[in-house]
Image 1: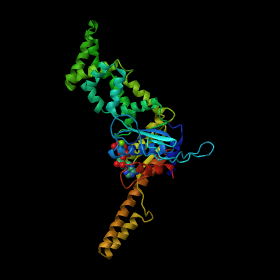
Image 2: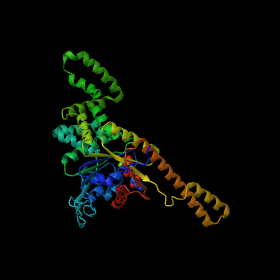
Image 3: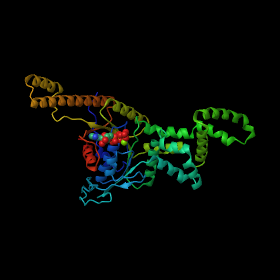
Length: 404
Ligand SMILES: Nc1ncnc2c1ncn2[C@@H]1O[C@H](COP(=O)(O)OP(=O)(O)OP(=O)(O)O)[C@@H](O)[C@H]1O
Ligand SMILES: [Mg+2]
C-alpha cells in the first residue's frame, strides 16, 4: 500500500484553460475562504480572468480584496501583480511583465471578488420572476423573510444559485467558489436539493392544497383530510406562520419552474466538464474524516475531484532533533543548573518536542488518508505564523501551489 500521495499541482489546474470552475469545499474553519482567495489571486496573476465568490470572509481579508460592502456584485480587486502570464505561449514565448493596473487588470489576467449576500440573491430571484406587485408581496412575507435569511440550507442554495448566474454571465474564464461555513462539507452538495425538495415538496403542497382546493364541492371529503393535517401543523407552527407559508408557496409556485429544478440545474453544472473540486482539510482527525466522506461522495456522484489540500501543516525548523531526544535534553539540562538562561533553553526544548509531536501526528494522519485514498492527489500548505488577511499573505499561500 503506497503512503506517498500523488502531488497535487494546483498551478497546473489553474493554468489549464479548460478549468472553468473550482469549488473549494471542506468542513468548518479549515481555510476554504483563504484557499479560494489564494487560488483566485494566483490564477489572475498567472493570466486568467477570475471571479472569486466568497462566503463570509473575515473582514480584513475582504477589505484587502476591495470588498467593503455586501452588495452581491463582483468588484475588481486592485493590486494584482502584473508579472504577465507565466505560462509560455504555444510558440514558447512568454508575456513581458507590465505595469500594475489599478483596476484589477493584470497583464493578461484580472481578478474580481464578491461576497455572497444570500438574502439579496434570494430577493433577486423573486424580483426577476415576479411582477413588481407580487414581488413586493413575497418580499414582505414573514415566512419568506425568515426563509431567505436564516433557513438551514439557504446559504448553500444561494451559493449554488450565484454560481449558476456567474457561469451564465460568461464574463470570466475562471470562477472560484468558496463554500458556506457548515459543519459538514457535504452540506454544500446536499442542502440545495434538500431545500428545493422542501419547497417543492409534499408537505408544503399539502399545506397549500386546502387553499387551492377550497371552492370545489366534490373535494370536500379530501379537503377535510387536508384540513386535519393543516390543523395539526397549525398547532405546531402557528396559524399566522402557516398562512404566510401558504401565500408564499402559492405565489412562488406560479413563478418558477420550481426550486428543485433550479437546484438540479446547478448541481449538473458541478458535474459538467471544466468543474474541479478542491477538498480542504486541516491535518486533524475530524477534518480529515469529513474530507474522506466528501471524496467518496464525489467519486460516487461522478464529480471531478482535483485533490486534497492539507492546510495549516506544521513543520519544524530542526526536524532532525526528535521529540524524545529534545525532552531528554531538557531533563538533563534541568538537572544541571537552574539559571534563567538554562530555563529558557529548557522551555525551547520542550516547545520543540511538542512541535515535533504535532508534526508527527499530522504526518500520520496524512499517511492514513492516502492509504485509504491512494489516488487522491494531495497538496500541503504550511501553517503561517499569523492569520492570512492581505494579498501578500494570499501570495505566500499560493507559493505552495507548485506542488514541490
Ligand atoms: N495556512 C494558514 N496558515 C495560517 N492561518 C491560516 C491558514 N489558512 C487559513 N488560516 C486562517 O484560519 C482562519 C480560518 O480560515 P478561513 O476563514 O479561510 O476558513 P474557512 O474554512 O473559510 O472557515 P469557515 O468554515 O468559517 O468559512 C482565518 O483566520 C485564516 O486567516
Ligand atoms: Mg469561510
